[in-house]
Image 1 (cartoon, rainbow, N blue to C red):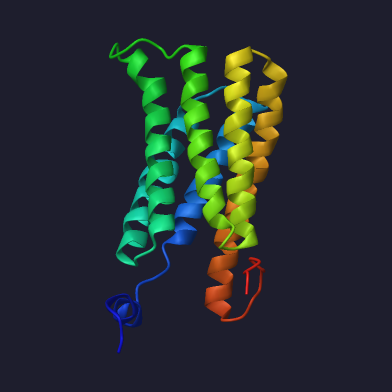
Image 2: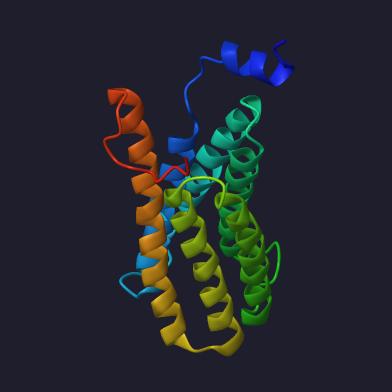
Length: 196
């Protein structure tokens, strides 16, 4: 007898939304962390990417993962889409006179709670692919380093975090393009490290 979940998977012919979410996350993360290593200021280019690629594209991917019954991907994409939108609002709201700028300590707690959340999601990747383990492991480290930088004020920690963030973003982009190429060619072009 076919279960309801199995029947839904059999009938689901929609595209995999994960590459969209991973690419939106990866590209936006790389650009923000190029800022973190000091190559340019936090500007409208990053904020625009944060709203559309990092924010809305990931939320769209998360909602579509929900339709596929993928709790992990739905939670991750929707949450990180909300992260990017909240990050942009933290930059914009004070400029609009709608709130005081966040202090370094409050930003430290903001980043710490995202680091804890990401670490918890990382534990779920231990049952998924090696590629996702790299993305979530490096993202956990990134959030924790950024939190430490804001708590201590030691700028070199932010620079180190920037390089970790660039690596994290590249690993997300790798995972996205691997899923696309492997699907298009119907063979493993780029390995994801499935546990089988």
